[in-house]
Image (cartoon, rainbow, N blue to C red):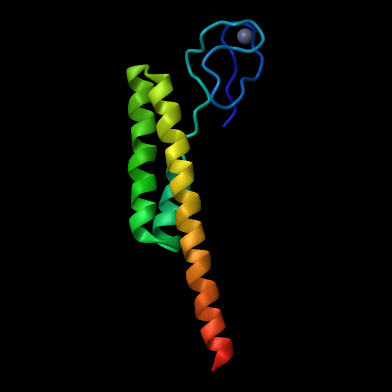
Length: 104
Ligand SMILES: [Zn+2]
């Protein structure tokens, strides 16, 4: 999702709290919540770690609403990390399953 600075209209970068162009504090910083990715990770990849990702991603929107952008960024990065961990576990499980299948 693209967000734009309310001061100068320039597109803002991910995790920016102050505009890099004009320095104004952004009303709506570009902090992805990764909710959809977390749900995919939970359903398709690995449920326990996907659930951790989803809980973190839901915290992102809460923290943005509270105006606590630093915390929102922390949860956003955590959600993404757990999505990747879920993907990694799924990949390892799939490879080990495939190897067992090949060795039969
Ligand atoms: Zn600006």
